[in-house]
Image (cartoon, rainbow, N blue to C red; front, top):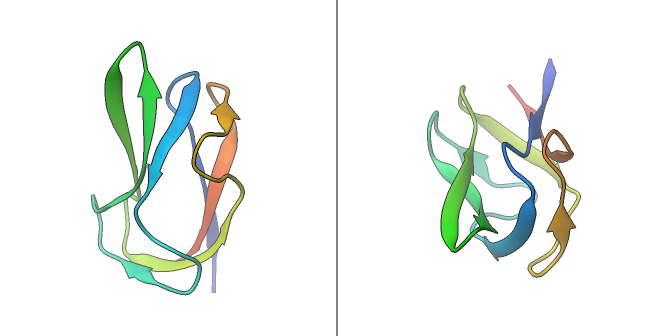
Length: 73
Protein backbone atom coordinates (compact mmCIF):
# COMPACT_ATOMS: atom_id res chain seq x y z
CA UNK A 1 0.00 0.00 0.00
CA UNK A 2 1.24 3.52 -0.70
CA UNK A 3 2.63 5.66 2.10
CA UNK A 4 2.34 9.41 2.62
CA UNK A 5 4.46 11.66 4.84
CA UNK A 6 2.67 14.49 6.59
CA UNK A 7 4.75 17.64 6.99
CA UNK A 8 4.47 20.43 9.52
CA UNK A 9 2.90 23.58 8.07
CA UNK A 10 4.65 25.82 10.63
CA UNK A 11 7.64 26.08 12.95
CA UNK A 12 6.59 25.53 16.55
CA UNK A 13 6.26 22.83 19.17
CA UNK A 14 4.08 19.74 19.41
CA UNK A 15 1.36 20.73 21.85
CA UNK A 16 -0.72 17.53 21.87
CA UNK A 17 -0.57 14.15 20.12
CA UNK A 18 -4.15 13.00 19.51
CA UNK A 19 -3.58 9.65 17.76
CA UNK A 20 -1.11 6.80 18.07
CA UNK A 21 0.68 4.40 15.74
CA UNK A 22 -1.69 1.73 14.44
CA UNK A 23 -4.82 3.86 14.60
CA UNK A 24 -6.81 4.69 11.51
CA UNK A 25 -7.72 8.25 10.57
CA UNK A 26 -10.30 9.77 8.29
CA UNK A 27 -9.56 12.56 5.85
CA UNK A 28 -9.25 15.90 7.66
CA UNK A 29 -9.12 14.23 11.10
CA UNK A 30 -6.53 15.87 13.41
CA UNK A 31 -3.55 13.65 14.34
CA UNK A 32 -1.66 16.16 16.45
CA UNK A 33 -1.58 19.87 17.28
CA UNK A 34 1.41 22.13 16.72
CA UNK A 35 1.55 25.34 18.75
CA UNK A 36 3.01 28.35 16.99
CA UNK A 37 2.69 31.95 18.20
CA UNK A 38 -0.06 30.96 20.70
CA UNK A 39 -2.12 29.29 17.94
CA UNK A 40 -2.88 25.56 17.70
CA UNK A 41 -2.48 24.25 14.17
CA UNK A 42 -3.80 20.71 13.53
CA UNK A 43 -1.85 18.26 11.41
CA UNK A 44 -4.38 16.34 9.31
CA UNK A 45 -4.27 13.73 6.57
CA UNK A 46 -5.82 14.56 3.21
CA UNK A 47 -6.90 10.92 2.80
CA UNK A 48 -8.04 8.18 5.16
CA UNK A 49 -5.39 5.72 6.25
CA UNK A 50 -3.48 4.00 9.05
CA UNK A 51 -0.75 5.73 11.05
CA UNK A 52 2.50 3.77 10.71
CA UNK A 53 4.87 6.21 12.45
CA UNK A 54 4.90 9.42 14.46
CA UNK A 55 8.36 11.00 14.61
CA UNK A 56 7.67 13.47 17.44
CA UNK A 57 6.39 13.59 21.02
CA UNK A 58 4.54 16.26 22.97
CA UNK A 59 6.86 19.19 23.65
CA UNK A 60 9.20 18.51 20.71
CA UNK A 61 10.20 21.40 18.47
CA UNK A 62 9.28 21.08 14.79
CA UNK A 63 10.34 23.04 11.73
CA UNK A 64 8.16 24.06 8.82
CA UNK A 65 8.27 21.27 6.23
CA UNK A 66 9.54 18.65 8.71
CA UNK A 67 8.16 15.13 8.19
CA UNK A 68 6.15 14.28 11.31
CA UNK A 69 3.74 11.43 10.56
CA UNK A 70 3.74 8.59 8.03
CA UNK A 71 0.40 7.15 6.92
CA UNK A 72 -0.41 4.08 4.85
CA UNK A 73 -3.28 4.94 2.52
